[in-house]
Amino acid sequence: MARKSSGRQILTGVIGYGGSFNMGMHHLNSMKAAAGLVPCAICDADPARVEQARKDFPGLEHYSDVGEMLKKSPVQLLTVITPHNTHAALAIQCLKAGRHVITEKPFAISVKECDAMIAAARKGRRMLSTYHNRHWDHNVLGLTRAIRKGCIGDVFRVEAASAGYGRPGTWWRSDKKISGGFMFDWGAHFVEWMLQIVDQPMTDISGYFQKRVWDHVTNEDEGIAVVRFGNGAVARLEMSSIAAAGAEMFRILGTKGAITANWESFTVHRVGRSGKVVPKVCKYPKGEHHKFYANIRDHLLEGVPLIITPEWARRVIQVLDYAGISHQKGRSIAVRYP
Image (cartoon, rainbow, N blue to C red; front, side, top):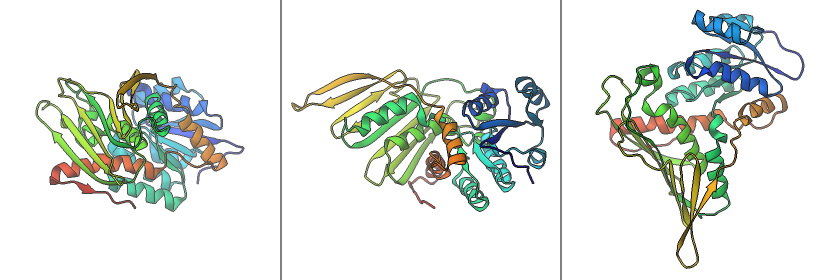
């Protein structure tokens, strides 16, 4: 059994210290910034990355095997930073060993995996979350605050897009068996934003995918996911690497106006009393990414409600997973909540 730490702190660690985007360093530094979370251990199967971790964080424990870490380390909270198709197995292994777990996004690559992870967390009475730090991105903060004020009335349609024309790189994120598919990377962020904008139960999901140009990778070239909500609202996400013409990052329609948005600013198009539409360009507030680990800390030490719950993260994967199933079956897929 792992030793317990003393005092009001949580000993933390990461599984995966890969070189891509330096996410291992990012997570450990984000943990350090949240007083009460204390980095303790690092694990990576690549000796070169373990050596780099030793240089970056010389005072921490370093392991090359997850099982050894779980046997020897007092670490209490582990963030899994590995390829998407490994998240579920590693999370369940850590949960069964009595650790709290965060996975990098996406949470997993299927609803079935999500349900197995949630069951393990409940059985072991451990916290489970995923790194949706962009829940506090500047864009979604600005959009949701404007919408909650009622400036465009009741939202009935959300259109989001991340589309361009470009050859994908040949790495694991382009391999569908590992990544989950084209929409499982940035698409996870977009879906999470859309589910904040339309805060309603989902009823069914449809998906449409194209594989026409990039034969050197197994990911799809383009994907469209459409979600229908219980109040009749519809959200549509388009992601494409074969779109020679782009689209608005967001187009949100309401009963009293609309919002169009790009990464730098958003425009509120309000319908006046005369029926004339008046546009107003608005600035985004500052992003608040630090709130993710602050909430994790407050949840574990003070019992504050967890914001990014595993059930919330499961909704994102349900959209991505069911969109693929819908495409295969040629029909919409009804949403079922556990």
